[in-house]
Length: 387
Length: 181
Image (cartoon, rainbow over all chains, first blue to last red; front, side):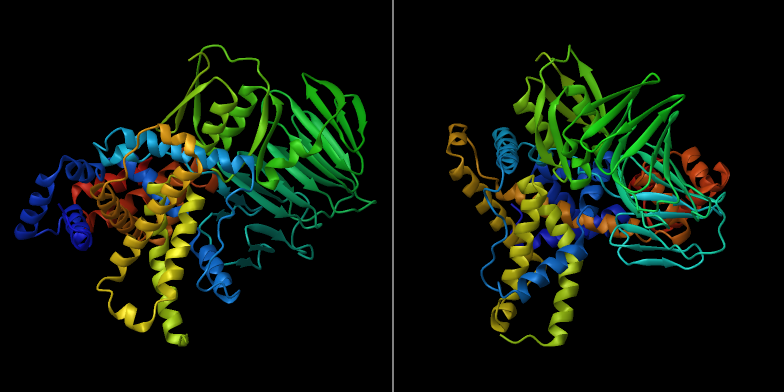
């Protein structure tokens, strides 16, 4: 058996082998190691499977090393030197579920006698993160990636990127109302932007927001696809208008969420007031109400507002939702495809889990809440409603 | 315990060079990224708190870090098992040394492959990232960047040629997959 000392040596031989730099003598040593166990062979084999490598690299890159370094420094300077109090073990029911799920997975795989090193590794998918693509009015494109570590300042275009937020500055004079920037989030991405008038917008996954370089007309007009939460800066003389589908939402200064995924749209008001027009129909929303627009018809009802903004607070919050709605959200945030078998139950789902959980953790939770069975392979989740 | 500025710089480099791969390793054992981060943080804190003599006695810092992460992860799994006694009904075996060793090798190799992929030239990086990280197809990249599909393909090809110089075919297949997906 390979000793603990020489795992580094074997790693270096494998890398030389992969890079085609291995000498005859080294190849012999590598061959001996391969003969020791079928696990060793399958490990080497796994480096040729691009889909596996892709997942592994994705996982490796998901760690924010700078943030962890700051956390480490904070722990040193707070004098926790020798004794650390890191994890709070019993914070929430969700956490308990998560831990239980990882143990279950561990035992499940442990039971399989560890035939193959791959078998011990539950395939999992990391959650979405702060990612977006900014297309500027002049055609330039900026990739706002999750690996962007330093802050970015672009004087010509009048924007800054700091801590995962995009800031546009108001006193940029070159632009005209007709020149529009566009911010686009991919699946498994989200981003926050502060518009030139100070309005804050949180853009959820798979969404699109376009807005003028300068709000210099008599109104502030933006276009939305997908989902966004707005905190509009108060400017009584210049209404702020969000247009999506055939709908316009007009406000002076207020907080609201708009969700246009799927066939209907949902506008939820937290503060202030908004007016909604769809064709020749108009309605006014009060805080705590939501307007659902489906096939040109507006209906207004009271709602629990937290449910519609939980996403921007980093939480999946389900309250009497049907399973397909829940899985649509999961599919967008983890960028996976759902394949359904059987008839979905009508059972309402209530529960919450942090959006930084891995996909398996979320599926584990949904598995305990419903009768459905989930199976994850190659970014496809097979959902069996009648196992 | 006094730490000179030079020590601190070295330590920061050690931390930043090794954190992600150790976290990946712990994640493979624990299947929980938050717990993995906790374990790696604890490991670096342990290392930080070692005396100069203790550090001298370590023949391979890399090996020491891996071994500490492994032990801490297994301890954590055992602790969880006790806290959730109902799960004891299931027969379980501890993770074998051989499996942990192979995971160490895997983490080392994956970290190196990642380094090579990160050496792509800057002008290929954006297209590479959009193609791989954002999962966009050629025509989507072309649309978003306002450039032709041919330019996207040319950029990808240039990146591939550069990679090909230093990589053998097996490795090349991985790179191609990342570029052309």
